Image (cartoon, rainbow, N blue to C red; front, side):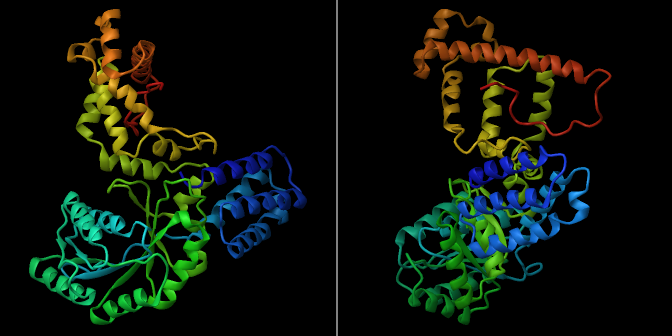
Length: 451
């Protein structure tokens, strides 16, 4: 995940601040020097880093801070607040026209930034909010782009308007708008052509589309893996086309995250959404305060809860809670919990949102490793899944052969499962006693299984 290395470095700095009962001005400046280096190594724009460090230093070296009882915590608080401001302060929504009035969104960006996929993801987000989007295929130079948009549109259950590669993009945009008017669509999203680099032909084509129909929002799709180049690209597009906002893709990669921290400060344009994976559901609204919390290792529980509410079935969750309480939780249930966890982005995604669970930069959680566990469970009969006690040595050998794993893996899984089931029953008993709190609280979609 982006920012992992930066988070680890900042947490080391903050650990040093917290360990000191009192801070001197020299302590603060030394800590901020380390913060500065960490941000520069994360490929944050130099001017942005300089302004950020100066703003924190001015606030953190006052007498009221240095003489306070918790100066380290206060400095960290200021770092958090200035990070939020660096990324825009407030969350900004796409400006959509009311009711049945049509909003035209023009997507633009360089080839390879993930623009066509981001376009389909955005359509899915808008549909979830009750809008009726239409995708318009204006990239006539890559036949694969049209096909990709049609495939993704079908997956999102969003219509796609296309005239193939034999027409001018301006004419396609006009015809797409008329099609939307005739078919009751209230959002038109134009997927335009990109290039490998910024050139005059691309800019002229985009400008012609904007002059031929009323485009209400011009959205730039930027690859976060390109670091400071992403900021340069955003500046050029804004100068030529007057960009309204940005979608940042590939934030789930091992990118250093500098683009997310620099774009708003340099261009003044808000980041609307960030791509967090390859699936069409892997797009999140950008919240500066939540992103700052993630960067500082404070987690992002609000986003995690929103993911859970969007992806998890409440009735199934309630039924699962009853099974756990009665120790009736079986391997079939566990398999279902793993599927739910996948919907939420996998274990690494969930852990990245939990406070204090920032992973070391050199440690990676391979969600694909859980496929071995799935294979073992799929190799069991329904009777074995519901009653693991009947799994004798000969059954274990059959299951291991079916899953393509060593029998020791089967033994370990069964042992862990039984231990988890006992632990969950004990916890349920404790919660049903005097210490029980009102309200169910947030339940994670995996049953405490030690993997």
